[in-house]
Image 1 (tube, rainbow, N blue to C red):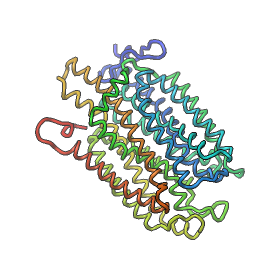
Image 2: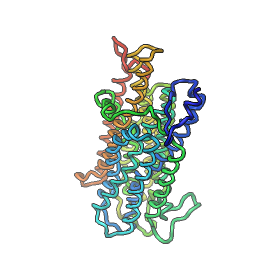
Image 3: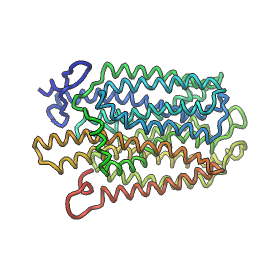
Image 4: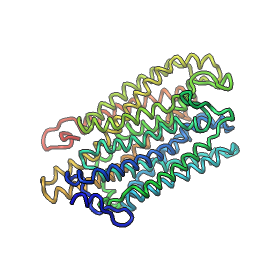
Amino acid sequence: MATTHATTHRSARWIDDWHPEDPEFWENGGRQVARRNLIWSIFAEHLGFSVWLIWSVSSAFLLAQGFEFTAQQLFLLVALPNLVGSLLRLPYTFAVPRFGGRNWTIVSALLLLVPTLLFAHFVQRPETPYWVFCAIAATAGFGGGNFASSMANINFFYPSAKKGAALGLNAAGGNLGVALIQLLLPVIVGGAGIFGLVKASQDGVNLQRAAYVYAALAVVAALAAFLWMDNLSSAVSKPREQLQVVKNHQTWVMSFLYVGTFGSFIGYSAAMPLLIKINFWVPEPAPLGTGIFFAYYAFLGAGVGSITRPFGGWLADRLGGAKVTLAAFAGLVVFTLAVLLTLTQLTPNPTADPAIALDNKSWFGWFLGFFLCIFACTGIGNGSTYKMIPSIFRIAAEQATTPHTAERTAALHDATKQSSAAIGVIGAVGAIGGFLIPLAFSAPWVEDPMSATKGAFVVFTGFYLACAAVTYGVFLRRRSGATSLASASV
C-alpha cells in the first residue's frame, strides 16, 4: 500500500520507499510526510538566515557599543558572512545525500552556536581588534549554507508539479529570517522600540542578548529535526555524480540569473540598514539624532522580498518560470533606475549637519518605496528561478526517454538528483552577489561614499539588463529545428 511506503521507517527515521510522482502514493500518506518535513525545514532554515544576517543590523549598533569602525569597515563586516555562506552552499548540498536530510538539519542547526556564542562574547569587549570581528562575522556564513541543504532536501520530497510552490515556501520561510532579525534585533538589544508596544532600553544597547536568543533557538531547531524530520533512502548520490551538473551549461546560465535575483536580495538586505543610516541620519543632536532612524525600516525590504518569493514560485507553476523571471528582471531595471534618481537628489554624506539630514529626509519616502519594489522583484525572481531548475532537468529527461517506461521513471529520478545538486551550485554562485553588493557600496577605491553608491546602482542596472537578455535568449526565444528547452515549459 502507498500508505505503508509513506509512513514506514527503519532505524534513525529513514524512509526506504518514496515515490512522490505516484498520485496514489502522494494522496495516501506522502503529502503529510512531505508537509511535516517542510515545516521543520522552514524553521531551521529561518534561523540560519537570521544568524547569517545578524551583522547586517548589529554592525550599525557597534559604534554605540564603543567600537570605532569606519563605514567601509562596517560594509565589509556585513559582506563577509555572505561570501562564506555562498562558499559553504556546495558542501552543504552534498551533505544531504551523504548524511540524510534530517541528520544534516540537526548538525547544521547546532553549527549556528559557533557564530552566535562568539558574537555574544566579543561584542561586550570594545578593545577587540577589527580582524577578530571579521573572523567572527565570517562564521555567520554557516547560516547561509543552511539554505542549500534545506532546498536540496525538500526537492526530494515533492513531485515535479508541486516543487515550485514547495521550494518557494521553504525559501520564503528562510528569507523571512532576514526580515525578522532586522526587525527584532534592535528591540531585543534595547536599541529601538516596536509599534509603541516596546520602548528602547534606558540602559543602552546590549547586542549579546540577540545572540543568546538565537543560540537557544538553534538548539530548539536541532531538537525538532531530531524528533520530527525524516531521511530519504532514495536521496543518495555520490559527490562525483552530483558534480556532473557543472558540465551542464544550463547550470551556469541559472547561476548567472540567480546572482541577479537572490544575490540582489541578500546583498541589499545586508546593506540597506547602513545605506539608510549613512544617507538619511546624523547623530546630532544627541541622543536621538536627526533624520531617519534605520532600525524602524531596515526589515521592510527583506520582508517584502520574502513574502513575494512564494508568489514567484506560484506564478512560475502557472505561467512558466522563464516568463516570470524575465518580468522580474525588467522590474529590477526600472526600479533600480528609480532609486538611482532619488540618490541624485540627496546631499552627500550627512554626517554632522542636522539640516542636511532633514533635507535628505524629504526624499526618503521615494527611496524606500522604490527600494521595496526592487525587493519585490528579487523575491518573485527567486521563486521563479527555483521553479526553473528542476524543470530544466525534468524536461531533458523526458525528451530523452519514452513515456510510461522504466527508463523514463529512472531518468526522472536521476533528474531530481541532478536538480538537487544544481541547487547547491546555483545557490553558491548566486549568493556571491550578496558579498559583491555591500562591497560595491563600500568601494574603498572611491573617496566619496555617495559617488560609490550611485556608481554601484549604475553597474547593477547594466547587470539586470544582461540577465533579462540571457533569460529571453536561452529560454524564451523560439528556435527552428529540434525541440529545445527554449520551446518547452520551463
